Image (cartoon, rainbow, N blue to C red):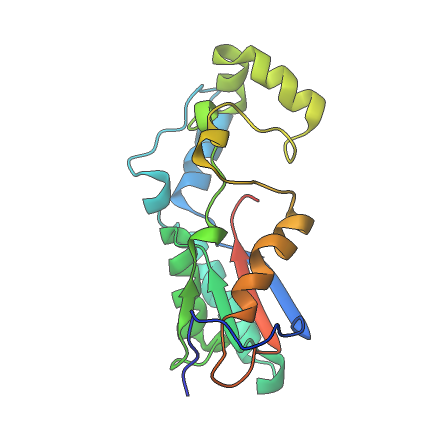
Length: 197
């Protein structure tokens, strides 16, 4: 029986007994960023919207390798539910992971907007050299606060709360997981893919 990705169980379910948190495979954006950094460029050259950036060849190989690795486990040690960001690189990671045996082919991949990439606001598309050149005040704030706590201008206008990863799991993943399988009880083994949270 396929799990549903919506609806809420009658009562809150306990946390999963196993929770894997993975990042998507290397993306074309990661490659472009590395090239920009190596050449001292101020901007990352991308031909897609961030949400549409695909995996690189290496990223596809990484996703398959992860699926093959999980496929080598007994079924009881594989995910019963997968929660993924709607970004193309995350969706491709999930599809390749499933196609490589890491997840049952008949099970749905649950895509949820709450697992999307955080917004970089006015720093979007800039390398660190670019931030230092075009937004020196933000570069200073970032150095002072650290990358996980710095929030550049504009992201607040989205009405979202970006949280450090530990709090992100509790605030975003728990509600998704609890509503993933009301037809047969919440799953006990959950794999979640996040982006830059």
